[in-house]
Length: 311
Ligand code: UDP
Ligand code: MG
Image (cartoon, rainbow, N blue to C red; front, side, top):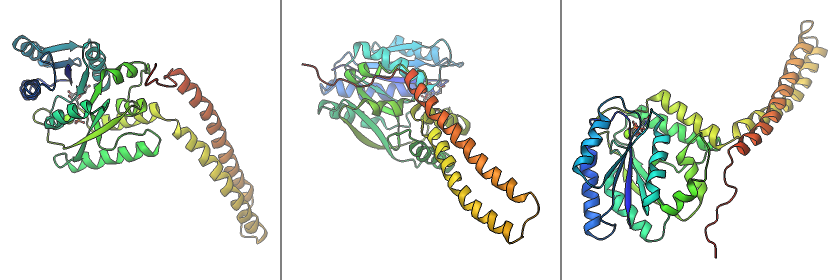
């Protein structure tokens, strides 16, 4: 069973030597225990770095036979870089594990992932149990985005980032998702297949800085929501209905005020029109949204079903 570990790298010149040597140890042990083939190795994806990352990767490659590298023409973003790596690695591997270059995700659970796969699981999610080493701000904002995204219909595995094992078979099916707004951790669960999780503690970044400051995290969450779900459009529609209902109560209140003479001239009709028109406008936008949402999901051309067995 041939394993490749895919590592997207963006300006990680400080990290990758250490990343390489630690991952090489894991692979060495797994090969020794006959868990994976001795052809197993690493695939570094350079996501258009502007520092020495590419040169360093080349240097590593010249020292290790089992290292491959992929360079993207320009910075395509973490998700696209990861996809490039996964789809390249799937061509000649049985299993592929994706992990960030900063080793915040505990590589000690890689053997467990491989074992779970040999027990028949096609996808194994790495899930962090605690984020003790992330700043309180990062922790809280990340938690907020998880909750927001799940609420708005982009279902993700809680506390799972992009640290996971995927079999060739699941990657073959995955390659049929043709959408360009990639949100891998929302898409992979759509595959189905038998999946499981392994747990680990998230560590501090070994070197370098996070490439996901708050604004990027916010964009990531918004992309996640809008590429996974049309629930926000439906919420507009529902808020229109809600305000319409409130309008009827307002009608009684306004009429009551009018007849008890507590109003200035013109107030009743003005307030009433605002409430009613507001709700009608929101409903209209919501209805449009429903249709646009349908068109939107259609244009993605996602597979409508996935065949797990054929005989
Ligand atoms: N990364 C990438 N392209 C980018 C941004 C990040 O390939 O445009 C890589 C980065 O090198 C790292 C991984 O994606 O290996 C995750 O980034 P980071 O650790 O900065 O994110 P965080 O863990 O802070 O959320
Ligand atoms: Mg990180």
